[in-house]
Length: 434
Image 1 (cartoon, one colour):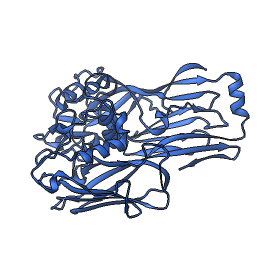
Image 2: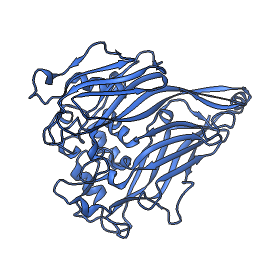
Image 3: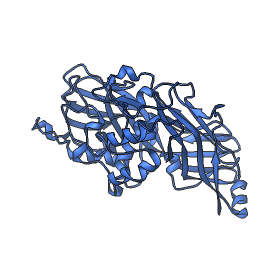
Image 4: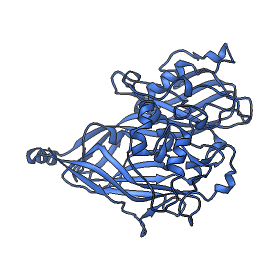
């Protein structure tokens, strides 16, 4: 198959070429039209220029601004939802809400500290030091012509799959990729000694954005064979997101997933009061926290399927159950969490370690942890052998935990479900089998 490179500009670009949430442009839409070619999903890149502004009337932030953004996410912190649809039918193939929160778990799990300091800074404006990231990305030089360039891939089940995506009218029928932007108050936060109210008008802005990708053109005989088939299927992984809060020492998360091939579930946590709040980092992946800042250590944890313990048929009794003063997060929690994000045996590089997955009674931001910020989370893998998943169509999934949440402090759990989907297409249209 021969290959070609394409560059696609947004279909909803503004007259001045800039896009920002605060100015009423919260969605960036790209259309990869239906054609007799196949998209190489892993080649897709979102590119453009990024800068921050103190107000919509100013040229840039000051070199001494106390404004900051997530050092573990960089430009990814601006992406709230990723949605991929068929251009021909409008059928949603994959939609990941809280996309930046998903990446806050995914990126540290599969990228090393060296990755964060080198190519991820060049491509995604990520730096594992909050001060370095603030100075080089947020507090850019005052010249309005100076902006940060970025070029990022879009991790998701559909695009990360190894099989090319058929764009023919007889198959997917082209793709419509939508990036929903996150509110400025969620992207930014102020340093602990700063007055957050003075930065309430701060915003970020994109310009010259485009989508670049590689397309493969099948040989004529292969193309004819594909177009002559009365129907076809395309199998891919998918991510689905959920949200729930807990506010008691007996924390229970319960969802009916409605999915037939679930591979794993993982979640990250933050006090609900930190979300969309300039005084806090709303994208930090913290542990449960009391309202005085003290950690609400997890003492016992288990997962359920239809009320029965599964896939681990015992309680995870943590170190804190016998030693409340121990601030080391139990390795069983971190192992299962990372294993749900990616097969633990396949993780050859990671920035998650004891230094940034510990409990603390004073840390409230990612910046209070070394190596790119807090990397805490809870999760479990269901099938790392056959990769066919576990049926949750008619049964509930649950997370049960006992923790030291002794105050009125609602904890927000962002839950992400990794599952397999099959796209079936034919003369009658297409359907996503979950």
